[in-house]
Length: 317
Image 1 (cartoon, rainbow, N blue to C red):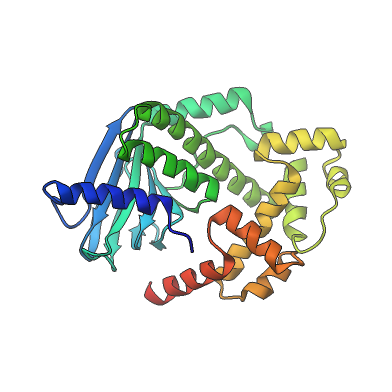
Image 2 (image 1 turned 60 degrees about the vertical axis):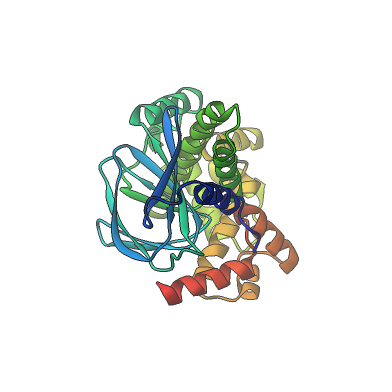
């Protein structure tokens, strides 16, 4: 598994702490880098701890850097939190956090971005003006997830690395990087929530509109070669209109979406303990090397390493 760029940035930050007075506290030692419509912090924990409370005054985006946390929230929410994962807390939400593996030599680190509700509303307004959803799906808005737990893609990981690197290294353009980065991060979060909502609609009522029926068909045939002409017939659209509508709502073209869903399904199957070879063929790949390459491109880790990581996660949870 490659060394995370975020882990390298956090290590740089900790070296600066050591050169100074050292960490002020062993649990959730906080370093604040800036405040510009959003507040960027890195938290380092140098000792194991349990039930450490985290409150979100505004929207709180958290990205794991190194080590492991275990989150406990409302509605029986309990989940391990590992590198390459994110969670988003709604304003007023509280979680309790365990740090089972943190030590002085191997601290647990994460980043947080506190984002105002006004900023989120601005991004929603921009999406509703420029990329409105079909009327059956409502408008762009944050859904009612109190804690949204995501395994983010390599593109989001690189975005977080750019934001953190700019501030850790005190770049001249750090405020601009944070401003643009937060907008992109919120857009990615909203699109992921929209995709999840559309998938849920497709599972429960595939006839809600043309796209939900198409999405349901794709999900039911991931292991097969999906024919675009068949999707156009299901949607009752011409090829050009189908491509336009699909990209408008999903943020990507239909063929790339199919690849993304295959890899998402692969990740789910790996979590259940299935072997890499089984998963490769179960999601429609005929070449294991191609499957490994695409999985790594999307998630920044190979299927084999992800399987090992999840096995460790299950054993230690």
